[in-house]
Image 1 (tube, rainbow, N blue to C red):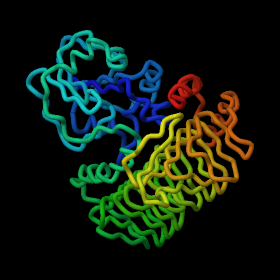
Image 2: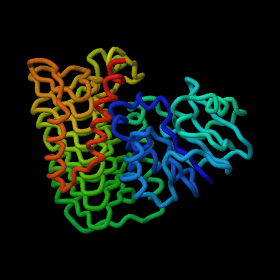
Image 3: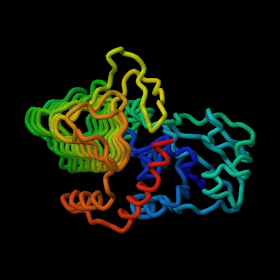
Image 4: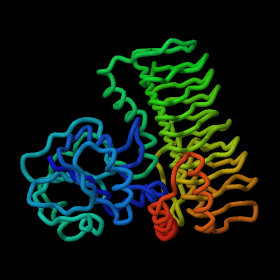
Length: 412
């Protein structure tokens, strides 16, 4: 089956994380939304439809890790194809209909469609052309199992379910545990990749869901990891850290303090004390010592998030912070409930940080100032060099794209 995963015109609702990656590369559970698309749809051929600015990202960072033959931004040919929204979180397999049909979600958003539409293109999806609207008018089919996210906080809320789904995939493999002075609860649901050896006093508690630890991860002495939880490859959980249920730590991270029901995309540091709860962090984020998020209002009411001039109700009583790639906080930074911290922003004030910090901004006690892209590149290059990561032309192009695109999304 030829499967097309598309971003569509509503990708900005996942800002600031989607400013620097396609929506299907957002983390969920022990992997990405794309991982779950491939697992549950089982394509024999895959096409990714993304914004033109994301095509180079896909070719360099996405395609090399796929085993399915994949193209980027190619229009449909004569063969039938299953179109699927990249924002969908798949949790079980999907039966393709026998004839052309579509499933449409709230807001006239296409969730998926089985089509025979030669020439249909990613531009049609992005601009919602007449050809795209004809897809919306196809006979209705039942919505596939799973959930269609509208905002990043949906992925945070569903992360426990996503982690349990990933644990079910691993259940066919009997876990092996190296000897050591650590403790497990419900050890049949604790998966440690080869070479992972928890340090003395570490507690791995899978009583509420699976604990999945990828290759190269380091679990520090006396840390407590409560499932469902996933620790990415070559990440470090610092000694005495508490990682609570519903948490995804992406690859190459270093985490300490207390983390609860949160997603960290990868290559980010929260090495010190401080609470991170019901939050989503991008890549290359650094939270200074003592940085703490509030995830519950004093009134115990619904949390909203301000993005530019808009105040968006989340529908949740628990919501911490959404933090874009390359953002940095100084020691002791306090992030209020429902905070938005944009791509490559710097927070270094002594008061509570603003609930909305635009991308490429520098906030201090003097107020909000622009963060020059030239200075941002200088800092990003230093950060990359610390991880033996080369600065590439695609990185500069991505920064330029974010600098041009973010203002219209964050001020609308």
